[in-house]
Length: 291
Image (cartoon, rainbow, N blue to C red; front, side):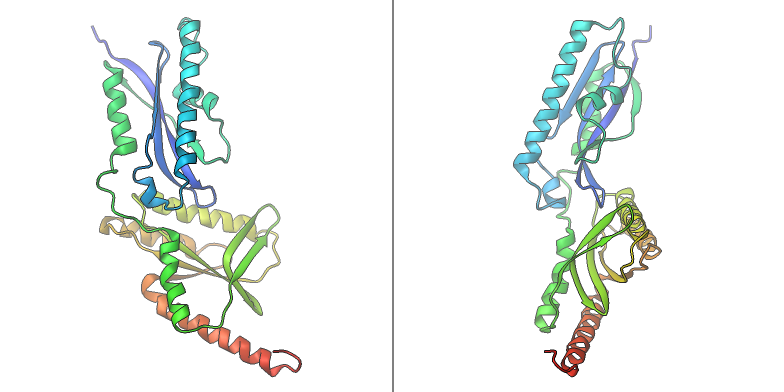
């Protein structure tokens, strides 16, 4: 007699920045209505997330993980009281949405997947290990967006480039986006560092796609003349370079037609900023009454 039973599962994702869409898997929820089986496990430490998102609020993250698990236990207890004859939930996705609603928050659920098993506990352990903690021990110290910007900042300081960056918000018809490093010289120049030093190819391409989609949404209806510059950092793994190159192509065709600078191009970028900044100062000095 075949003792295998079907189950479905979803992965809990922590999205650090809803604009870029960068995420890491933070937990797994597995469910089988016929066996009244519901199990969830979330991260009890930040593990590799610290390397990917150095500015992560550890305490807030772990509190949110415990909150999700408490909510899941309440649902599990309620299902046990109700029995399995007429289950309220049919899939893991149904259960998950009752615990964490689908919105633009930092906790989001993956698409639903499933399988069959004669031992749910063993299957759950394998899923959690493969989807959540698999790379914890071997993950290199990945670079953040700020790490990509640091050599630009250092070189600007070394060259004493007379430019002061400020935050500039571009407002479109339905969306807006803020750039932390911008300055105006006839029109606005903005500089955005993007680290593609991520764990997998899909994450790399997805980050580029999200930026492109956001730029398109802002570009519609704006009257701003923006010169956008992306400074991009490559992944450490040679296997991910094709995905990185594809991400550059995705960004290059985005709205505002951004210029793309790889790390080897940083000296050329700094030289360009320096030339424009000194020309801007010279033009200001040539106008009577301006200093």
